[in-house]
Image (tube, rainbow, N blue to C red; front, side, top):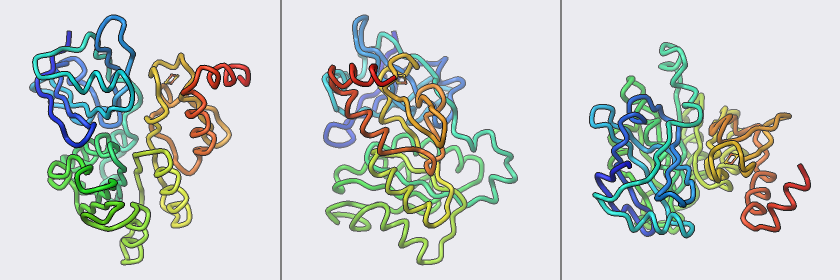
Length: 280
Ligand code: FES
């Protein structure tokens, strides 16, 4: 059993939990994920690692209520436990393995949308701890929906919040903020975009035009996270990949977002899943 040491509401339907999982905490890296199960018969839920404390043996996860299982998860309190907490899974962010001297010369921009701030945070924190301060744009519908703001400000070079309703920070989409920064003369060597599929698609369309190589995280299309269900199958250039096994991070300029979005919509119904099986 994996004990929840802290459970906190970050925003409407968004929760943060610190879970005691020393083995996962001892060797996880930014970009990786875990699969949690509440009880024996519970659904397997893949969640990206938001933070880790190797000494305390804890992993921080952020959960958004989107279905029955995640809603049930949102009701858990400190002292409750998860039946399974498997990980770390997936590949670590590419920069973790990069030569430090080369990496230090790069100017990086992170773009997060909604709960995408959770997987972005450990990456920006890792870079900060290695002497690299990346710029971060975080977008949300309203000010109340922005998460991990203080944490992000502590580790980012420049922090640019954006809200759709203009209630805080830059009024408008994260893409207009990217354009604004580039027009002001900021130069970026790499962009990392994590958030809803539609946001990642439009960030990639823009960064392709601006010639900024872009990494995306295809977590949103993962279902069981085991390479078995087929939900996260996607086209990357002329290759077929599985987000949970080969990713979750990919070259955003090669990902076929329209196909991935259509597929993940179909995957939500029994009939759609049967259709996908016929096509394979
Ligand atoms: Fe099921 Fe990747 S999430 S195969």
